[in-house]
Image (cartoon, rainbow, N blue to C red; front, side, top):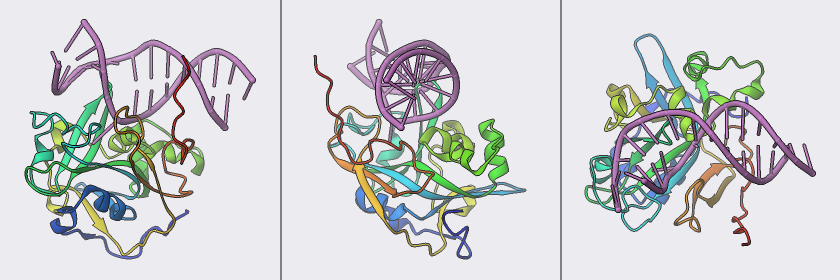
Length: 220
DNA sequence: ATATCGATTATCT
DNA sequence: GATAATCGATATG
């Protein structure tokens, strides 16, 4: 294991933590833990890669065009799950930031599994043969959502500050080192902003290339 | 190792 | 009717 498995009990995070600018929340979410509690087991994984989305001013954000049925959670209070369905296949998880009417958010892009790895593999339909296969579980926004069984029907709007919700964010005292910041992945507009945060050299980070290099547009 | 492409559907124009 | 905050498979060097 690259990171310590756990430094102690996992404690919930105050709503005030999320009531701040998305860049700030994104940066500080690194090293925190996403937890799924079920009756019989706990899934837990360290947050190692996130992206900030800035709300209505940010052309890449789902909030850019104003409030709709899909993105309504983004315009609500901070600390709640915004789950959307994309490319006909994948769910992605965000946490709302800032305050009512101000639709900042942070997208979860990659996690390092800490517990419940067998269940994550089952949910992903994978049988890892070696530790090198483990990133297939949670490296990427669609993968981590599938590993945690996150769906829009079940999890959109759930309170990520409350363990009672079954899906929540906790901290165990881990302090991340060596954070890298790059442009966001997979967007067209707003691709120049440095809003992707991840732990350098962590094997669970998605998209190994394009770490720092902006895309050079193809010639015509 | 990097590049390209098809899958598949909720959501918005 | 077009698009998308992705993934996995395939092709090519």
